Image 1 (tube, helix red, strand yellow):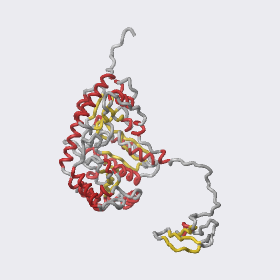
Image 2 (cartoon, rainbow, N blue to C red; image 1 turned 120 degrees about the horizontal axis):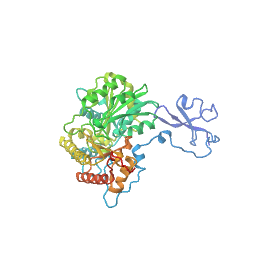
Image 3 (cartoon, rainbow, N blue to C red; image 1 turned 90 degrees about the horizontal axis):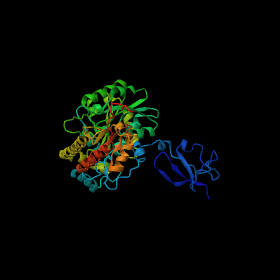
Image 4 (cartoon, helix red, strand yellow; image 1 turned 90 degrees about the vertical axis):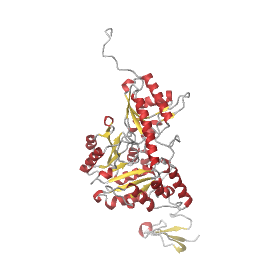
Length: 475
């Protein structure tokens, strides 16, 4: 065999088809002295080998191990639910109040205008290829126009489209944090924050929410957690799992703490505008005068299409604090998966502009009605303390565990509820908030009523009233 080689240019996209005489190796490896670290040119032997045949492998046996990131990735919900013994009562049909997916039972379809927008995008055949990693300019402008307001104006360059709101959250945590940094996370709160952070070597500090104050933040506790390595404050409003909606005055107090300590905010606003009548929902950015905010949202909940995986980051850079560095960091991170689904991007402008207000109103009306049914029914059940939500699609219920001595904790309580009554509620230990459980209020009304009847029956069977203050004289 001759000693010719193909010259492969590594620093641009050209591959030279002609052969060239291979220079004499300078280091005995078959590669010139500069190799790939010098002039960017590899000299590859025609037999496909870069190195001589006599180089021995450093490994003597197979030893393939998962990465530290993989080992450190744990979803608390899965960790708890997968360990539960969930065997429903065969005599009662299962009612799952645990899954935060509004499409499960088919009673909350998206609007026809949303479907038509997708059909038109597919039929156009304009969105079958790659888009820029941050999204099509026209689609980003549509999102900017939809969410822009005088207090927090947006342009297309302030929007990055992502594969669902979950990826938006991941990108924000990644752009703000280094290993060893810490983030402030609500408790109870969406479990994904911790899942993402811990896998990347980022510490999570949980700040308390107060059920007796409709799940407002314990601001004093939150502020006490801030130190020099705090790189991000996460605020979820409206809330998963609580269904709470913060008042304007409370949001302003949150911003005051963030401003005092110069901590940027990740605003998880995937449930924005999913607010019951009588409540007001302001975006954090519209209230901020100096705190820079990255707001995460998407189509999943308000438009009832979580499987379409369309999310976004809205960049609100007060006083140019982020500058170009954070923006460029987000662009680079978005390039890791080459952007969100292009077909949904193609439909996005029409979805935002043509979905009728009636659709939003009907969805919210249904969620409010189901929440009121659930709250009113469970409020009269001994040993339970539901907290009425103001938005989103969840309701949290406190368990007076001392009144249910047969159960050791909320996990045991909800597990037995499945076994005996075929009603599955998510134990709030999954949100690191024991002695509560979360109910999803998106099920059909008749199922919600039936679930409440079964929960009442279960609690009445196991509830034990407070012991008498009188001591038995024979004891």
